[in-house]
Image: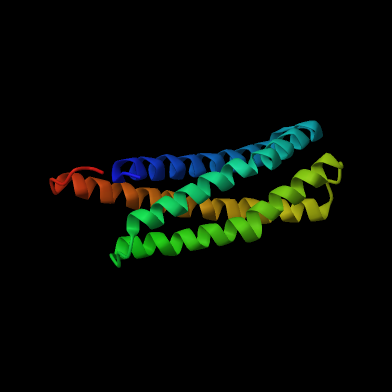
Length: 155
């Protein structure tokens, strides 16, 4: 894949992942604070069914970023790699299982203390991933700006 296409894929996939996680987070918080039980069920079900889209966006982001970075040991690249490892671990260990658990519990009408606890954990983990993804996006945009200023083709 040409570098220009890879850069575009990386930017689009990363922005999509950030947008999806942000949408999940805002929707879950809004549902809990302002919607009826039926609204919470609808939001939790929608999140559950949209998780595969997020996983695809995250895989595309990570794979394209790894390909673009190559063997670089630049500090900005190392920082992005470390954040991406935390993002992926948080997603696989906390966010995806939480989304499945909360979606299934909501569909079953089980809104108990366990539901509330998992939801708090999910919101906290989601906030962490939003911050980490935003930091990675900012770093990527800074790298692109530096590349443009240095006179190199933006690719």
